Image (cartoon, rainbow, N blue to C red; front, side):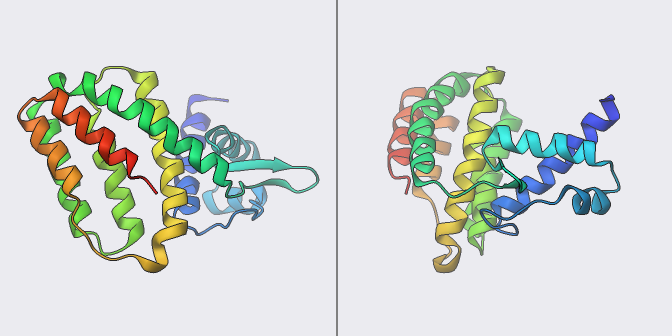
Length: 202
């Protein structure tokens, strides 16, 4: 594929992942390459690459004689995501805190405020992803960041499915405590609060 096709494929994968996470496509629903190609004005080859990208993330799966479908909601997989987040995010945060710039800390604060102001589960989880990715932005480990980004996406998918109907606006004291520790450059405290926060994942 050309660089332009790769860029288009990545863009389509991003947009489709957002729809899956927000519930626009349901688990098991077939993703028709011809319809997606027509919507985005691209070839089916480009769409197939996008779907393969989503399959590598765990959002899409291939089924015999059905093509590519939204992956099923597997509770064992959801538990695996929680376990992996608890293992990886505190480590990334530990390496990130000393390196965060003032501009990055401002982004963390903005994401925290967006979480507190969110009116829906979907909006909250998008802001929550931004917060969690922002706090590890200084860890300088691209593979670790990429893995955590994918775990965040998978967690958001399961979170939205469970919580959309019973959502209520809320403040997050753990986020506030992590932000305060980061501002103090207290790596140990930030790490400890993050561990506590992730142990509460439902």
